[in-house]
Image (cartoon, rainbow, N blue to C red; front, side, top):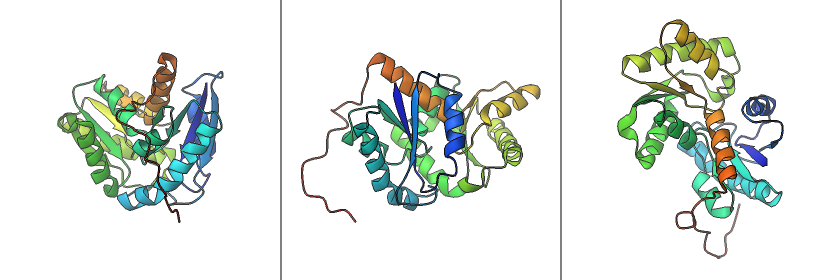
Length: 239
């Protein structure tokens, strides 16, 4: 099986970490390819960024499918351009949000998302509404750290711990990391909480997304063409 990971930013800053993270969730028999956007924003932290990144994401997904990928993971919690990509290609395409939330809903009654910035909160709220699970989302907490500054693992873990306790105080049963750039910290956060006698699962969106793609592949499932119909044939002028 060949999984193509689209990192929807113009820099390859995170590529090595993302590849290592992906390898921790899939076996050596899985072929993993990673690519970035040829144009677009440095990171996706707003609706504006999402719109700017969309065309380049769809193009990259199309290239991945043409090169023989069996599935595509757009590694962003905001699921940017995922519906459009599903219309374009006949293979499974996921972002970080849907798989992570679906996983959380199997582990507890209510969940909280911990994300990067306040700018992202409306995006997550919109996704939750679209997925029909707003009533089960207790809160969206922020660590107030831009995506491109998530490299300090110790500082991130401290911020995540503080945000986790805010979410737990509001009644969350499951915690979901709301940024795929929060690499390699889910297990550490879960262990830290367990040491405090707080036994709650912490969902890593990368692991949830890759796990879902493996399951879809093993079951031979693809996006429904009744929902994700191929775009009508017409002239389209690109920039």
